[in-house]
Image (cartoon, rainbow, N blue to C red; front, side, top):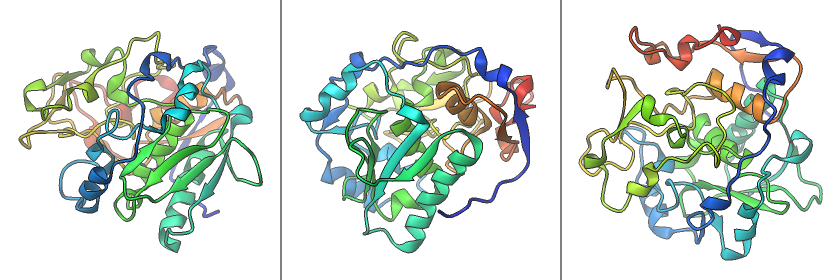
Length: 303
């Protein structure tokens, strides 16, 4: 595996993680929108994507919330289980041979970045029935959600989906069981959805889930999360579709890497007891005097 360079860290103690006892994310209510067929139309959009368009490539999909998909009704039963954590904190994987050396190295770097900051382990498959198949089909960037007991997929259409480490980490976090940040039950306290700017037919991508469906694990809302939409996701007119309350200029949707709160959520979901290293502020532009920034520390264990 390719080691990822890591900057400065703070320690997270056992007590910070022991307070979280809930280990389930109930996805049963989401099953009607999360299964289907990979879309070539999405592939065409991602093929034309470049970094200056103002949105992330995974926000171009025709899937649930843009990039959530169980390919085929046969896998629909996977969403009926309440428990989506991978056993033993281990995700076995296979990577398609069609990726270039550079692209495969970035995928492995994303895995290593998660490993260095959590207790999650990525291990190459040696016959296990439950594993992640990382493919490069002409259907965009998408992932299944969580553990299903059998093979699940992450698709990273090249080159667009394998240009930034955060895009890969975004899909890996879906596979680990995480939903988009702005779909949290408390999101309306932190952001305003600009419904008038959302393109017709994409409104469902901005629905939020109740806390009985998706657990936030007691972690504060995070504008800087690698799981957050960009400000202009699914825009019909180039204007923002989601803005921060109190300061519409706060950026969202970075894909440079895991935020401190992303790391904390993974550690809490997977009960990573023991001391863990958490990356400090790497995006001061997310800070604002009137709104607490995820990169500027919300609470003591990250500060």
